[in-house]
Image 1 (cartoon, rainbow, N blue to C red):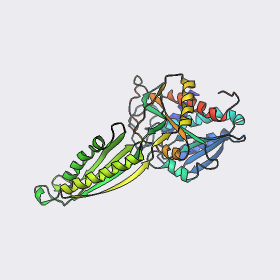
Image 2 (cartoon, rainbow, N blue to C red):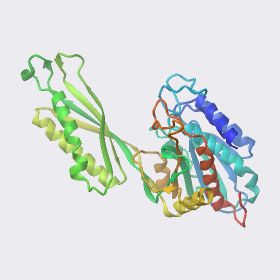
Image 3 (cartoon, one colour):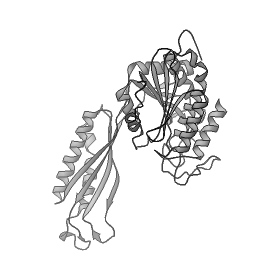
Image 4 (tube, rainbow, N blue to C red):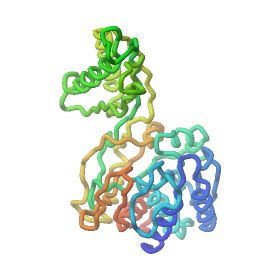
Length: 385
């Protein structure tokens, strides 16, 4: 199925669509699933698609999730299947995930009559920070039938082709955004003593915040505090009224996450006061940590060993985030990574980079692992793929 996997993936790559706008993608997905004989529901969370396979014989319901959205990134690659949508590209591998989901459905469809239970194929919109998983949950994706377990995967270029990552417990961090607004008193750049400079106060706040992890967190825990945006002023000789800082906190532990926010607010408040300024903070929680349950994780490990042999599993975690965590808060499951990097072929750019690409052979590994894991739940009596 490799040629078909590549052809479908590259078609999606040429025609990327942003979150909640995946109309062409979802139409193709729905058409292919319908042709395979699945019971298909469209318009879930606007552009999501759900397909049910099996279900005639009693057994567990297993949710298989694949994300579809692209990113607001202008592609800078020179391969023949470059994005034709200005300012939009598949810079994270979701084109591959969607192709893999369709290939998996095609691979398992001939076994529907032998399935004891149901496979629930979920093609999710808007994973990239727009709340697609949460929207699908609100639209009933975890009902009728309710899944007993969930499986999801991600092509991952930091891991080389031929390897995988899976670990019990947290595998991806929670992610949240904070905004600090530092207010002072504006004035002329030639007379700073007559002003209260919010830029100076904000600069010291940035430096102070980067001490939070090293002096407030157990070295054995994993936390990230990063400032990614600093907005202030309109010209070179005017001290502005305010400065705005935006950043992110990442962790695997919600209690620790709250502690970090308390320290951010405390440090920013007191630092601003020391410069005769004041500060306010707003926070937005984007996603929950992705936490793998013991049972499904054991199933995925066993599937990887059967498909790829022993010695191809890395126990690494990542501080990247994924909204699959919301689904795994409701049902036990396993989220794993399929190595897709290749230094020799030049697939070295990180996810979300304008030149991002991956070793397409990794899609075969992902489909095979997911098929083996899914089959272990719903195909019994010695049936083998």
